[in-house]
Length: 315
Image (cartoon, rainbow, N blue to C red):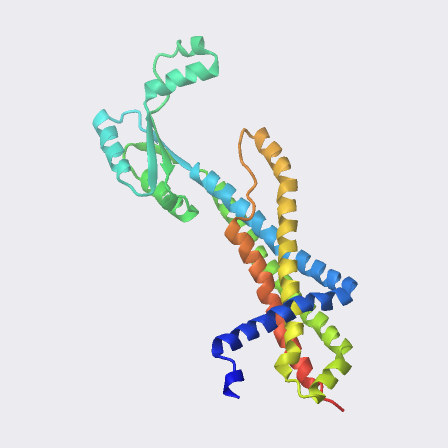
């Protein structure tokens, strides 16, 4: 007897082979009901593709928001009587502030020369007795200073400077842009929660119907001594295949959507002299999408299969 007893590596190999056999045999179970399986996979794919598409929309909105926030500037118009020493002292202090990424100084003379070249009526400006333009500091804000609250605080500090006549920053568009992105973020979370709950319900209900259709087979298997875990295994693998194929379908649908819109977005960006390209799902995000489909399908199938198979007892 001991000569025929399998060692633990052999038992482990047999266990793995048995699971692989049942894994691929479960594809045959799906083939027995092709219409039902295809409909379930299609629902899973669409249900996963919708939140993935909303995520892509949010990802691009955040990219646009970061781009425009990086262009946020504060303009400091200096007093006409500001001395060179005062200007130099202010410029040195601005260079040490963490909220400011870059400081550009435009003197009154340079500003007038630039205005003459851009306005097209240099001869009229020559008639002026004095330069009416003030010197200007243009402050490009760093990442820590681009939020509406930080920019508002910095604007107040700059307005209090003795040699600053006026400090200007359009806060309205920064607040609106931040609000739109926050709204999109909340919408994506809510939509994803509802649709992923739908995935759980669809997989759970599909496997429940499969179990009820196989009720008599399950009763016979229990009569001959099959354990619940053995009976459950094929149905769990069906749920696994639903998750794998549904996740891949969702990835493909999202890829098609991004490809379809990318040309339209590029053409629209060109009208605004921008080279913005629509961002899609990265490699890690694509893998996460497929893994999410697999995990949700396994959770739904595990709950449904255990519950309904335990409820079936031979009469």
